[in-house]
Image (cartoon, rainbow, N blue to C red; front, top):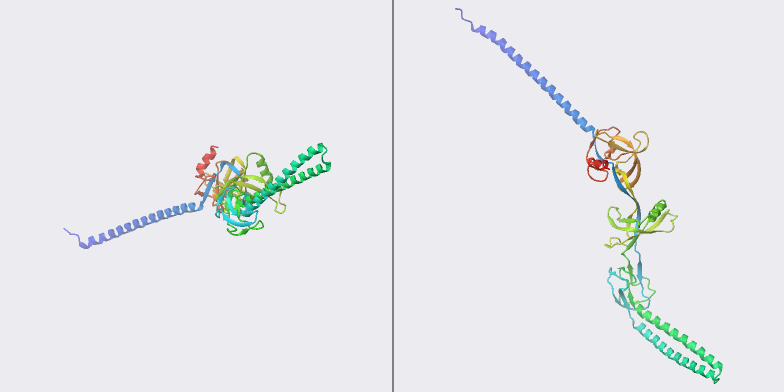
Length: 413
């Protein structure tokens, strides 16, 4: 038998191995192509989603709600005491005693100071003695007059003597009345030596010390008392508001007042409107008004500047939106006031609106919106008509809660 030669096997195995490596290489290339294609497709899809997400503008929205709106007028005012009294002595003398502490609250009639009463006590006693003496002289003249009346009936004396006695009695009666007036004056001066508070209030700094000689001519007096409870605030309003305020004053109880600090954020006190001045200041076109506050906690201090809010009425069941939602310009080529409205499609649409009264951070919508619609309150500067939006930090038009929850409440009326 003929046995195969070793070189024949080598010559046939080599081509098979080469074909196997070629097939493996082709499969690898095919798998790489498929991987790259899928990877490219995934990246394209991801970038598209990111681009779509980036195109949506993040905005805050609020629901158009129905609410009662308080109509208030804002003004600047100054705290003015209802009474400021400089306590002065009405007589001259040495100040013996001070009966108050600086800054103390006193009541009407409370003891404040004592002036040396001895000279006035002596003057009272002297006036009383003169009255007693002249009263005795008058009594004697009246008895003589009665005797003369008896004698004149018997024709024992001349008529002239009777007339003279009558005149003398009248003279003594005048002297007695003068003495009585002197007694009352001396008693009043003695009373003035004991100084009391004419009004209730807070005493200021002492103007004179005990031991000094005081007179009614002293300009500074002894102390100043300021009435703090109640206290008033005087403020001004433009003449255009006069009719509205007068109408509100005639319509019912006293109008409510609120006093705020300089920043307008902290409410200091609540009170009521007392009255309006009887004329408008032609130089400023304003009218003065006075409000009264109980000021039991002493939050209002004399001559303090405050912001005043006067409640003149309440508008019932009004459509309101946050003031931050209102835009001004010409988005459609027509200048005016507008808002951006959005809905389930998450698109911002321009809506022209007509506005009414502004109350704090809210404004009444007269026309252009319906209850429950959502308006953009933040991020409107980056919007245009039809722009895609993404809601964030939504709140209701009534000032709290999410926009969706506010919209449901508004929809229920």
